[in-house]
Image 1 (cartoon, helix red, strand yellow):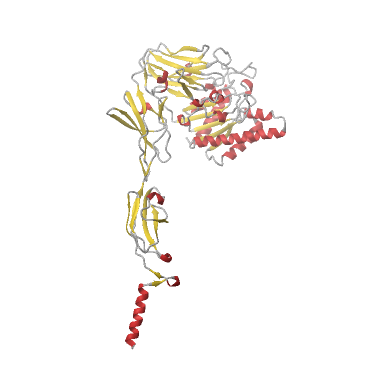
Image 2 (cartoon, rainbow, N blue to C red):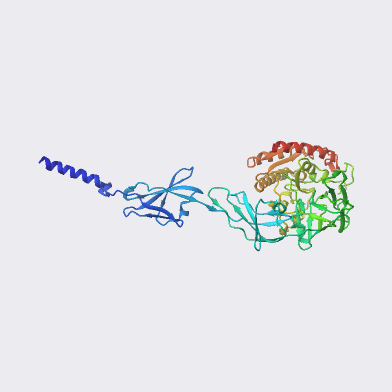
Length: 552
C-alpha cells in the first residue's frame, strides 16, 4: 500500500514538472529560444516556434543602451531603426499568457548609411563650389577626359589652381567621402564640363570668371548678355598675377557723367599702397592701363579696388589683357571678414569736412574706411555689403521707406534687390566669412524719430529691434561658425544705444558667438560722419577686439 501511495505521489510531481497550469487552468507550454537567427538581404530570418504568438528583438548599439521591438519573420532591417555602426541583436519567442523563451544567440549587424551625393557643383571665378553634407567633411573631386581620370581631395571654396589640373576639357564630378563609422562614400554627382585653358594673355567673356587666374573680391555678377563681370560694392574688385610690361583692362561705368557719383578705382601693384594709382571713370566704357613700362621678367601682382560705394555707381570688367602672360595663381587669406552696414563702412565723406557742400565719390574713400583698414591690419580678405542711407528695418532716406539691408542681403547688390532680379540672388557659399561685423541703426533712428505720434514711434522702434534680431539669427543660420559682432556708436546715435544693447542681449540666447562693441566716431567728416583719422582709430580698436575674440 505504501508503495502504491509513493508511486502515485511521484507521478503527480512528475506531471507538474512537465506541464504548468496558467490562469483558468490553461496549460502553459515552455518555449524554446528561436534558432537560425540571421540577417540576409536586409531581412530578418529565424526558425519560428509553433507555440509562439509573437517575437521580440533586443537591439543594443555599440556603446548604447538596449531596447526592444516586436518583430516578425521576414521583416526588413529598416523597420528596426538601427543606429549607424555596430548593433548586437537577439530575439525571443512570446507565447500564451506572456510566457517567454530564452534569448537566442546574439548576432552582430553593422548598419552603414550611404552618403548623399553633393549638389550644386560649379567652378566659378576660379573656385570650386558645392553644397556640403552634414555627415562628413571630406570630399573627392574627379576630372575625366577620355582615359585620363584625376581625383583630388577638395574643400568648398577651394581655388582650382590648388588642384593642379593639366590643360584640357574635363567632365567634373564630386563625391562625399565617409569619415565616420557607419557611413559609406556617396556616388559621384552628375558631371559638369570644365576647361582648363592654355597659357593666357587675355581674359574676356566667360574666361573672366572661370579660369582660376582672377580672384574676384566682394560680390560680383557675370552678365551673360553683355559679357561683363559687374563689380558693385566698396573695396570690391579683382586681383591677378602676371609677367609682362603692360596690363590693360576695358572697364564700363555707370553714372560716369556725374561728378558726384562717378566710380572711383584704385590700382595697387605688389601691395604698394603708397604709390597706388587712383582714377575716376568719366566714360561709360574706357581702356584703363593698369601697368605700363615694366621692364623686368618677374612675377607681379595687380589689385584693382572700387573705392566708391554701390549706390553711387557700378563698374564692369569686359576684358583684361597683357603683352606678357597671366599666371594661374589665386591667393586666399586665412581670415575672411564681412561688413554689413550703412554709410560708415563705405568711407562716406571721410575725406571731406563738416563744411563740405555734399558727399561725393571724391571725398569718400572706402580704402581709408574702418572696414578695409581692419581687414588690412588682420591680413584678411574682405567683403563689404553696405549702402548709405539704408536702415535695418526702414529709413527716411530710401524710397520706399521700407527698403532695408537685411532683405537686400540675399541679393548680389541693392539694385538687384530693388528690381527683384531673381537671377542675381547671392549664393552664401561663395564667400564664407569667419567674422561678420554688423553696423546698422542710425538711419532707422531717423525714421523712428520722424513718427508723428508716440504710438507710431514705439511701433517703429519695436519693428527695428525685431528686424535686427531676425537678421542676426539669419546670419548665424547661414554662417553658424562665424563670430558675429554688432558695432555701434560710430555716428554717436545715442538715442538707440539702449535698443542696440537690448537687441544683442535678446539675440545672444540663440547665438552664443555674438559680441558687441561701442566705438565712437569723431563726426568730423562730411555730414557728421567719421573722418579718415577717426576711421583709423576705429579700425585699431576693432582689430584688437577681433583679435581678442579669436584669441590670436
